[in-house]
Length: 248
Ligand SMILES: C[S@@+](CC[C@H](N)C(=O)[O-])C[C@H]1O[C@@H](n2cnc3c(N)ncnc32)[C@H](O)[C@@H]1O
Image (cartoon, rainbow, N blue to C red; front, top):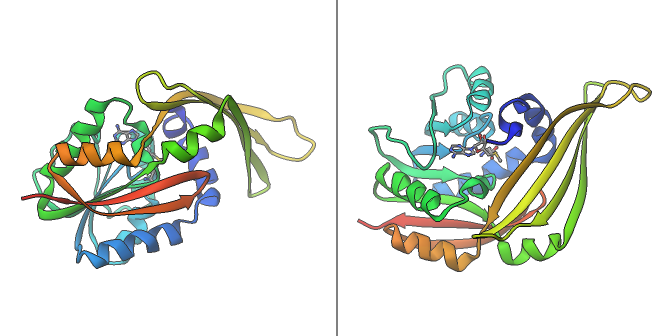
């Protein structure tokens, strides 16, 4: 698993609070859930609880699931009354059903194999009521991969309480068995402008983007029908959002 979600979960929390507009993310998904009369939500890859906080404030019956103990520790600290489960989104059983399963923040990028995505869809389906919905986003391979060929270097910087944090990333195409790319990242902290920069850690990962057609096929093979597909641009990645209904 990425160091970003383990050793550096604290840095993730500081950086993504500024990179992401969680209020507008929540409003976007809240509107979709309301259109479908959703009352109960299971969020896969819930991370540090940024959506959880807003879900609970808005009266959803909510459970968050994540693989990382460090991310869940942040979520539990923020929301002591929240219910959070540590599990793999492709292999879990909670013994209850929800009117929606939510998987956002491009967390599908970590489903590297076809069996990982098919197992996630099987688990999600198993935890939905009849006609329940799955709402998830994917990075659009068609738009994203050409922008990182042959490689793309990026720096993301945030300030927090007088400390500067930054991440230097290099994205390059991988493409061995799916629409994957390689992400090499280094995280730094500087406590004052004249202080030396401190290397906090390095990450080296493969992530996955998808074409809309392959998502439609995965859904069809897994007992879902697509009821909506929306383009969405948020934090650096061209994204598709899918709303799919469990058949039966
Ligand atoms: C990009 S973060 C998104 C967090 C949250 N969805 C948000 O929008 O703020 C991805 C999250 O997915 C989790 N994750 C990665 N692989 C996972 C897996 N196989 N099962 C469950 N969670 C996973 C990571 O621990 C991390 O918290």
